Length: 357
Image (cartoon, helix red, strand yellow):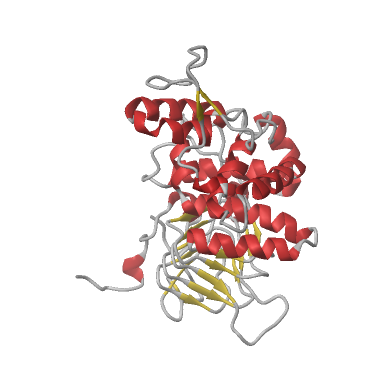
């Protein structure tokens, strides 16, 4: 029988030596889990395009409880690594403390939190374990997935840097997120994104059948369908995430926020490089379709329910079906804040429509 069907992942012992938290007896993990797994105007003269672009790429939020939410490009990775220290060294202890506080409030969740968070010395091993349990089934054992995910995370350090940036992005931008550990355990958009990062690693190494299998399991488990060939940046928020579809040749930049039922798809008549390219700091509202090899430039915003078939210039807002620029094509309203970070869906809407309820 698969270990997935066991009523509890623990073996109880009576030794009082180790108490992971209040209200619990000592717990040890079974042998199949290994600890070694690793408001603006049309033209604002005070806005400088060059400064805005740098701000979009290197923005650092002024939240006292966040150490960093820098959208990191590949060229900047080394520098940011030196700033932040080892991967997750700031977030993981905090997440474990959040888990202990949650258990104090809800002791019936002690086994769940111990097996998911408190047992592990690193975020890498906890993530490998949690994803393996979420994506396993009777013919795809969690142990097999765990070993696979652990190896990928150990070999590709950039994935864990992205995981940390994604955690910070969700905590900062989504008011429904009450803690980092809450995001890690309960936000399927976050989990789907991390599973995709693993699948993309495998795809890039030629292990396409395995990558496509992970895509299929993620689609079944989380209702998020991201082709493993798609390239996704860091500091990503998939808010709610249900119904998100991202095609094979899509590219998503850093600090992008995407809501539910968004499709980054093809037109159905092209092959090869056929999917959208999303710049840094972009916000895409719920139910939007962006179709074809078109670019949504840095700092742009696409209103909910829009259908985008052409390029959206940087720092502009596109709304409607078909999507049109607020302010018009010749003199569109320019945004002075990054929508992917502010999550502002409604600014300038009066300039597009006088609709009232």
